[in-house]
Every structure is written in C-alpha cells, then in structure tokens.
Image (cartoon, rainbow, N blue to C red; front, side):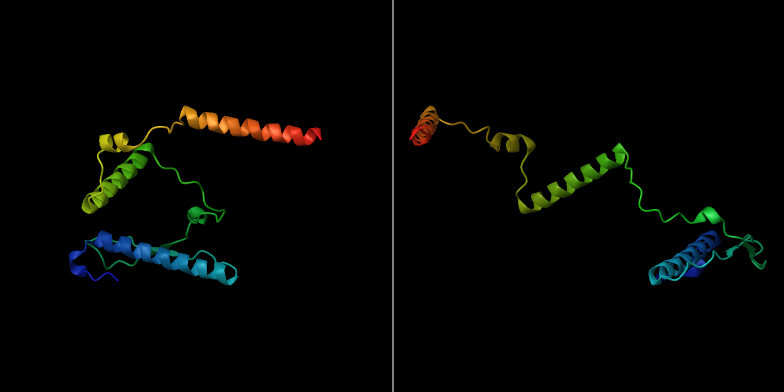
Length: 148
C-alpha cells in the first residue's frame, strides 16, 4: 500500500488515484462475476469530480458510464512492437549479457569469438575413400544376395 504524506500530493493526482481505484474495483467485481458464472453486473454510475482546487466543497456530479468504455472480451489481440522498441530491448539484453559475462570473466570480444569458432569440418581424402569402398562392398553384397 502507498504510504505517502497526502498533504504533499497535488489534488489533481489524488483525483486520478481515486478514479483509477474505482475503475479497479469495478473491474474486480466484473471479473469475480465472470469467474463465478453469475451474470455480469450492469455498469454503475461513475463519480466525476467537478470541483477545482479553489472550491473543493462542491459536491461531485454523477454521470452515466459509457457503454463502449469496457472492451469486448473477444480475446487477446496481437501486440505490435515498433522496430525502435525492439532494437532498444535487444541493446539492453546485450548489455545485460556483457555485464554478466564480464563479472564472470567469460566475456569474449567479437573478433576473438569469430576467430575461435572453427570453420566447416573437412574429411581427409583417405577417410572419404574408406567410406566409398565400404559402401561399394555393401552394395556388392546386397546385389549378390539378390541374385541367388
């Protein structure tokens, strides 16, 4: 729970906090109703405070909640991330990786890492000839058994 001194928080911020808290409570009630299988409650009246900082003694005004305020529970949509955000996340992950491996002493510079990776493995001509001879012998045996 937030334990700030309320006298240091601006009135506009407090209003926003109250508004968000009411929205959260309404959504929690709706979620509870959906989970329990009971019909969802009708939208209630939202209290919209119309007073200013100079006249806080005026009473709040109630307005009808708009019908399109709650999104339809059709499912999750696909989240779209901008290329800049993707690049920022990648850069941050690379920085975390470098910091972690630097502390363990296992970080490798990019040039050293490329030089250390071996190229494609090559078979010696003798090894290739031995495999070819074995395959030819196997197929010769196969043909000889079929011919009997």
